[in-house]
Length: 193
Image 1 (cartoon, helix red, strand yellow):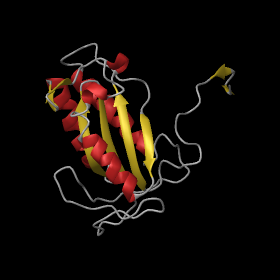
Image 2 (tube, helix red, strand yellow; image 1 turned 180 degrees about the vertical axis):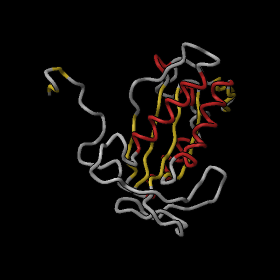
Image 3 (cartoon, helix red, strand yellow; image 1 turned 135 degrees about the vertical axis):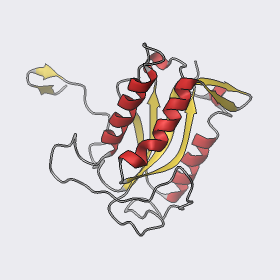
Image 4 (cartoon, helix red, strand yellow; image 1 turned 120 degrees about the horizontal axis):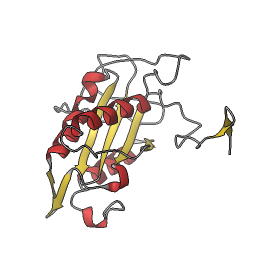
């Protein structure tokens, strides 16, 4: 294991061959700490959100207002985690769709959860400040934690998040369907406990 400043560190879960500030679509999963069911219950294939689930959902939809280089794809809150697609764009305010080197043109249905704003990559500055997916998830988790702890002091997230770089339109459609049908399949979900 690699050492940093004489200490062992856990290697990054991110793909070392990919720049997470590159334009693209990303399938994101964030779990609550110890997979506690803070966000509500799935019953009869439908998610019934708790107040904490409403906060987690509302703040996800705030992401494009905080980060003008992000558009949202499919999203769902289930009892102990969230799934969502984040689409990172480079500046081009006039586009109706995303085209990247790995992703085919994705449909641009203008829904309340979509935003086609621009943004940019900050180059070789501190990667913690770059316009990238990790920065977005850090903001989302911190904001949720702050707001939810006013209701439930013990609320927390797992320390990391899971991501999958979406490589083509077929994968985008398959993942979108998985996200949208997640409450229907809750009892078969690997995070069901």
